[in-house]
Image 1 (spheres, helix red, strand yellow):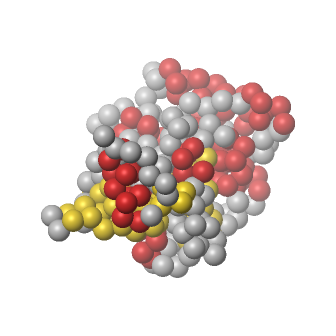
Image 2 (cartoon, one colour):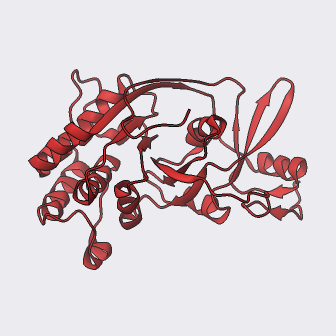
Length: 283
């Protein structure tokens, strides 16, 4: 039987973190793989870039992270034992359904990159299609297209008070299109969108999803996206098994912190990136 330990809750203050990273990346899909891979790589680039993270479908992953100021322990597990590292690149964690916050961060001049770990199904494209294109028979996508046509047709990328209460979007690409509409209306800064999903030709799939939605709702917005947004492809690898209560207990014993959102991973990692970053990227 595992007994509850009396430990200090992990957060920025208890971890001794006295500076805040610059919020330069918006990430959608804040699951274990993102936190073992992209967030870890961003930390090791060591140039103060921070990630504003949003959940993909379920809001629950954001709750423990938000309570810990985005800080968590990465357990690297090998035949030689476990090592523990506090990762602090996530500056805030949010429910992906919070379109007010998501839109504001995508539109912000400081945001240079949008990254994605939303699984292959999250792009709502026809699987295996060459070239990639939207699955227009998808009921969730159909709902989002109708919603965006009604909203973006107002010519206003910023959410009004009424929109905050009523606007709902089901899919990550549609939420990004909403944010890009706000960015276009703000001052049309360029940025890169980078898929970190294990999907063949993921940069092209991402482009097909986002530009396809835009073309269906606002031709002017679609033209702006094609001109100002770079779609970056990548190949990724790092095994990230599901965390267990035993793992959480192990972290508490080893570090002295009560961490409700640790991640366990293997020592090996790889990330090959192909594309342009018009607003810069971490080292």
